[in-house]
Image (cartoon, rainbow, N blue to C red):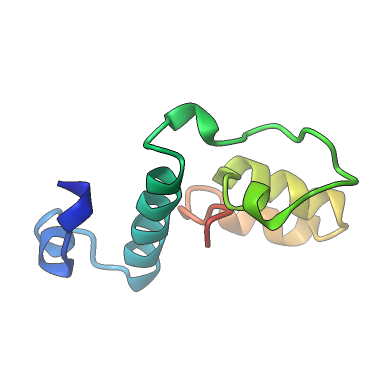
Length: 89
C-alpha cells in the first residue's frame, strides 16, 4: 500500500497539512531505499565529524533537534517537537 499512497489516501486519513504530506512521502522514500528496515533510522549521533548526506536522511525528528542544539541553534529545536520534520526532509 505504501508504494501507491495518493493525496486522496492521505486526506482520507485526515492528514491535511502539506508539510505532513511531504514528511510522509519522504519517509516512505527513505524506508524504501533501506528495504523498509525500521532500524535504519538514527536517533542518536554516531560520529559528528563525518556526516554524509545519506546518513542525514535517516535522522529522526529527535536527532534533528539534537543537531540543532549542537550547532548553536537551540532556540529552533522546541518548534520541531512533534512536527514530523525528520532528516529525510
